[in-house]
Image (cartoon, rainbow over all chains, first blue to last red; front, side, top):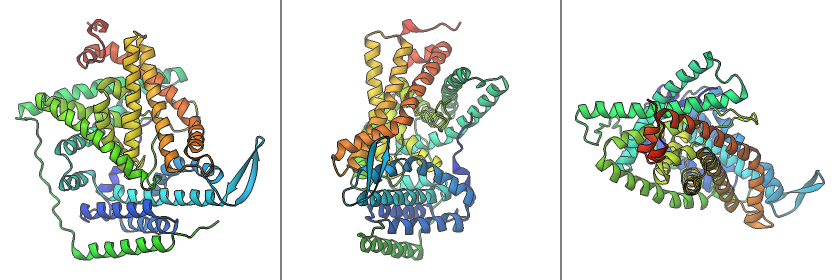
Length: 263
Length: 227
């Protein structure tokens, strides 16, 4: 029994921490758009290489942590790939296999589709990781406000972000307390323990909410938080033009390799 | 069930944004009204959102051995109703993408549609219906959580099928294929989440049934006195 830990900690001490958050969001979104629009696997693979370089070499995120994060998207993707290879393709039959009396034909189009989707998932995840590993959430809120997201949405998002860590700590304490009292030691009891943990966590959150509200009200809260943005760095011309050039290069790469396939 | 970053090509990823954004906007608008009358609701909802996130990052006691997490959508829709659940899920899914690498930014619209809107909505209808016919509370809660999970998984299969139709047989064949391949993990998961939600709900009723009455989840007559 354990809690999944957000990899948020790396955002506060990586080598690209000082790069303006607007720029990092822009890099990540441009990369994502090229990835999902790319008609062949070439541009996604180039983007994966670029994002890996930026995140692991430039931002100095440990390679092990990075690869571990990549397993989540791969676990989702791997079962779908044979499916695509065997069922979705038209075109020539590459080979057939017999499973339990059914003969399955792997087709050329199916294989190419599976390859394309796999490259997109890996490159897309890498583009997401670049943002997730280098940019603190608090700075992303600043970007959201600059992009005119509804203030209530940003405010709730910020509070949720804060309380996630409070509740994770509470949950870990409860799990520890349960474990020393032989919780989760049989299959049936693990259900009981889990139910007790989650219901208690809900009640605790609720009580915490009521207490926080009272504390805020005593300090003159009228339904609005007022925040100041500390990071007012401007994106300079040079990095922006480099991004533009690389972006255009990748779009051209995606365009000229549109017909390229392996099988 | 999260669709991973990069999995959906255009136009599907942005069509799901077009579907989800107005619904989340509606949830936001509803909440604004409530918050204007009652400012402390904002804080309670923020904690509810954090609760759903933490719930979904806990590991379930599981049979299959795979790493399965509850979605929390069934419990959330019983406690807060569908429009608030949609809003909270939209934020939670953003954090799951950015903090845990579950789901993604381009697939956010599709994931909100399945896990935040349609799945919980079906679960909520089941809950309302089973309360109407005076079904046993445990059974009602089990059905709500399990059906919300199953509906989410059906919607996800549809989303994948329309984006990747089979060459022969089209969307329907492809839907069947995705539906079968994910059934291996999703059906046991729905049952486990149903059972777990029953236990959670049982403790909630025992410990703080006054809260549930206050939130209009159970009727005052069902309140258990803890005195």
